[in-house]
Image (cartoon, rainbow, N blue to C red; front, side, top):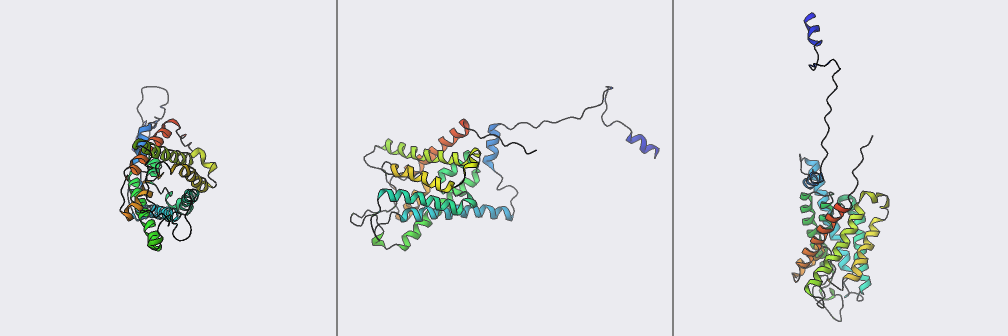
Length: 288
């Protein structure tokens, strides 16, 4: 017992000072902006994978698939004029806006309902989606677009699958730029329209806007309508590579297809990077 007492009475930390030894405090190194972006880019979805994590990834992928299928089915259905009357320009743009709203209402709680590889790129740059999930979202959005248009194609008589029966045009719902525009005008108009949509998404996803999320699906749908109503006469105003990809696969129509990938993706890359740098979200405050 005496030996035990002598052991425990030894000072924990040797000191040559008569003052009491102060505990050492290790300060956590503040994460730089680049380190934070790298961490967000890598994500945690595929770290220490188990059944539950796989199910979460699968559900999010299916959410994007069905949301995009909903968008293309409802949006392109508004272009069908062979069954009743020829749709006018206003109704087509409005129908696509409502289709976006329908997809958001139905699947936003599952995956976010981006329905658009470009908007998913914006989400990734803003740190709200990892790089692996961006690839998965893009694949399933494209598959969803093919699925939605294929269902519409299957339920519509072939002789009625046109916008104007008096002037039937092939490849219904395929995007095509206005031939009156030069190549650069077609590109930059599609870039600008896609940039406006990306900016709208940046504002919606900003944490400072959390108190304004009532009816966000309606507002986003109306935003799409506002851009599409005026923009379709310029570049076709796709703003969404998956929206162009679905009908292109079914019709095997690839004219100017590169335009509807390069311009929207570049626009989302530029706008999201600009927004993150110039209008950064405040860091979350620790809960005391």
